[in-house]
Length: 322
Image 1 (tube, rainbow, N blue to C red):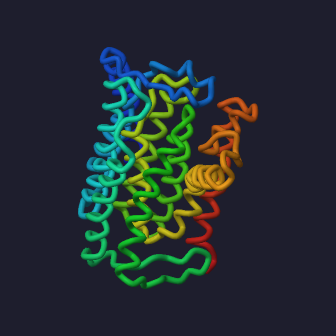
Image 2: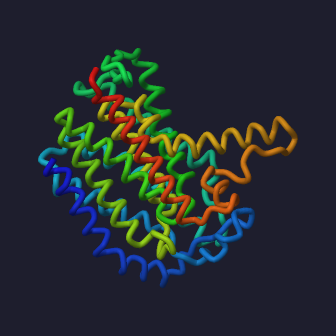
């Protein structure tokens, strides 16, 4: 428990201390956010707010992980994957701010990089004796010894899916950072219950970095995390899900991210099948509620509440009376 709290405190301090200087530097570089013309009109005022603030999050997680953890056998690999996803996002953000357009890397380019990282991680899990193709089945207390091939593809799905779902969630001030902190807290508790200190430290570092970033990213945001932070955090949560042998439980703990991703998939599918009709006013889901008249802060707070509920249910599914 102390290691988790220690990691969270260090990551928080790193982000809080470096935040003002980083934001000022991004301002000087004119690395301002470009806003999609087709997005909510209320977001046009966010144009010019510095992006790529996810660098702060990645720094906080990295420093805290190495300072607070008593061992680094798997933590180093978890950081490698997290930073790898973050670098893909960094390249994407850099293209956006330099070219002054709302889209950076092509979707297939980002996806290819993510899949390559996920393949490396899957092979690591399959060859490292501590892991193996094992996953806990929620609400049963049973363990499923999966076929290696199935486990391999599940790892790819969890990492890539998590990264992109968190990226979709990053659309309102404080939304992604807050919901990731909640999910990471659930994973920190799971890791502590399993005696997995490295994963607990990693979770604590994510929590602290996200809370520190929310200080600057809460409404009205002084900085955005961009794909640098969103892809990095999504990859980090996927790593935690696999380290704690709970990839199936991630669908519950990360319920907010699942809903956001599903809303996009449903909208696109329905639009194509019906020749232009929509289920939601706009996706991802948080935009639907914005356009329904909810203030941005109300959407964020209610998503926090939902994220907390999902996290508690996910915890119960793993450490309940089974």
